Amino acid sequence: MKALIFAAGRGERMRPLTDACPKPLLKVRGRPLIVWHILNLVRAGITDIVINHAHLGHMIEEALGNGAQFGAKIAWSAEGTALETAGGIARARHLLGDEPFVAVAADIYCPHFDFKQVVDVLEANDPWGNPYPADRRDMAWLYLVKNPPHHPHGDFALNNFSIANEGEPRFTFSGIGVYRPEMFDAVAPGEKAALAPILREYATRGRVGGEVYRGDWTDVGTPERLEQLNAPLTPARSK
Image 1 (cartoon, rainbow, N blue to C red):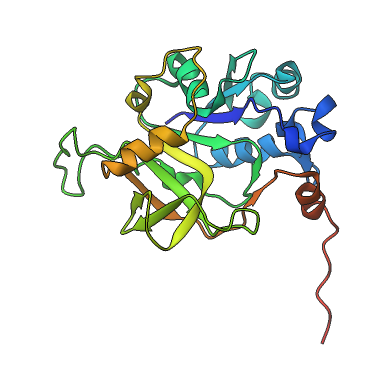
Image 2: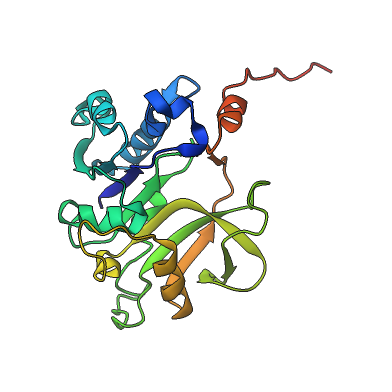
């Protein structure tokens, strides 16, 4: 399995920090956000990694190189102007191949996410080895989290591992998902396109699966959240 890390966003809400530093290189506990993901992917045996970039992308390439320092092999998908999430996938499809791939947003912090769990979530066969009909296979598998304070209404409902646009309880999309490349056939390379409408369309057809991730997770969307993550740990008080 290959991985795609989304690193093309401008990080407007993180300004002025992102005026001179691309958001994926902002550090949490001494390590760039994007490096947390690379190390976790490599730890899970996913070493072929594609990274897209736009704003200050040359700085990301200079910092990470070909990935050898992390035990990875990095391929770069330069966009110039950010193409949004689905557009970024379409632009990088020639690097991702024809099999399902995992994609993760560079600007989330989830230091304990185990990427081993993503490898077989979009298997073409059922547990008994029988192939699923092509028109009934899940096209994506999303990892959801409990709604954070800044996003109280969530994105999707979850019912028996099936993602739905409506219903309760609702959860927030973590920014980690597994996708079949053909899900993006309608998006031309170089076209700007958002991911959410495509996910909602397939969810309406009952073809998006998912589960709740309950580990540490933060959307590092503002300087305040970054500051909170980097605050000194308070030692537990002795009784």
